[in-house]
Image (cartoon, rainbow, N blue to C red):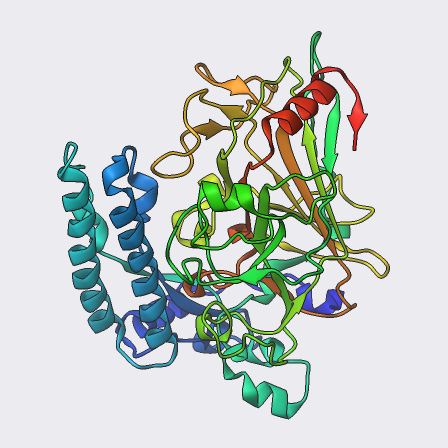
Length: 458
């Protein structure tokens, strides 16, 4: 990708924004408008589109009884499907914005009531969920269709018409050389755990791919609406249980049966991937060639504030937020960079790497655990991040920090994007990583011993 395509563009006039807003809210689909032309300016600025912004119901849950968990998870997944379906109707021009939002509110209201009812059968009815049924339109920078569909033959582009919709936008990319170094690490204190434990699990050579998410949507096929890459546990999918994970084989050389997974990265090259007409792929606006990682590094690190304690088996951790475009950046955590420039990390932009440099995705997982739970209702509150000095919050204890580093040899000048929920428009800030610890107690004890003993173990 050339630097020329990323020059700063002029800010749109207020008149242009008003025109765009009127078209988006009253029109019959995702509207793409060249703002500068609308305002009578001579130069063309970045186009604007709309997506659907719905409150994240799952993130608001703090307690779900075990008896209600299956029904709640199924209905949370149904909320995601309702949004994805509504976005597809919007992007195809199949419904007007106002009518679509009204129908979506009604569908979500029914599903949210089912969630509340399921919880109320064995616990206190959750408050404040009903108002979360209403969704709005959210403006976002749109992909230039000429860029989006670029690459590949005309026949290939015709076979994947979705490639002209859904992002990413030119403004989602930035030359890594233009970013100043921004990585700061807390200094190790006396008694810090300075060792490391590296697990070698390959690069998903066996092409273990599916659009499930057993943590967020267990038992639901295509619960993620985007494709995941897996290493480690060989059988992980939506229907996995602790028992099946513990009985599975693994790609890890030390016998670690944990499952490590993340959204695939695709070239936006207009070519028809094998999943071009499948859920999680083309049917959910995830198109183009799936890139196999060049390298995957899985490392567990210590705490600069003290010793770490063992993770419990079957601990589940999600880092980042797959819905960061609509939820906001509060839980966004994935970092993007380039080899040779990893002292410069991006949270909300894709890097444009110089020739000979690879794209890097890094996931620094939460390293503090509440000492009790292997999961929580919103899959977040049982773990936490250490503060800027490396200390855990009160009531939490330090555990080995999982750091995943994934590199890709992206061809020079190529556009690429991470898979996402359709309405999240493939924004870089929606990147995320998932982990279920299935290490044996003995292997975890070895990891903790290496980390606390200051040794580098493989």
